[in-house]
Length: 174
Image (tube, rainbow, N blue to C red; front, side):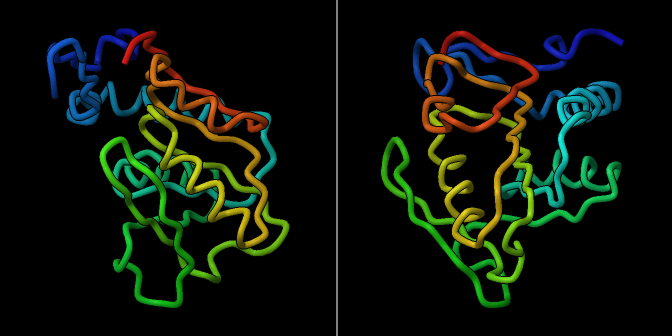
């Protein structure tokens, strides 16, 4: 099996000149790449005690569910506003160009539960910071956040200071 970085397709000048887009779909559409990505992310949890895995729509589902399944943990989806059927808690947060809102079921996290966040990418950190606030608002404790890729130049990790954050692949730029 080749290194995980070789499964990620890099697309120059997308969505604008000077940006290199790191495409996770090339990892997903290769059985070895997908297996390796999940295994490497799961490895980052080997010494972590936790009760629940959470992940945001949609790529957090892709990576979070198999990790939760493999480790026999529940998976809690975090979705865009208006997509969950029961009583929810939500949070609005700033994006580079505008705002977004995510939510989770009010009864998804019990006070004192130790929570791991799984997602494909940490960039500016806005979504990740919002997820932490949702979990903590329900009384959960975020014990780790694991990402397949990190765009270090966007400094998303700065928004998660004080939390245990790891990425499998770190790209120095944006």
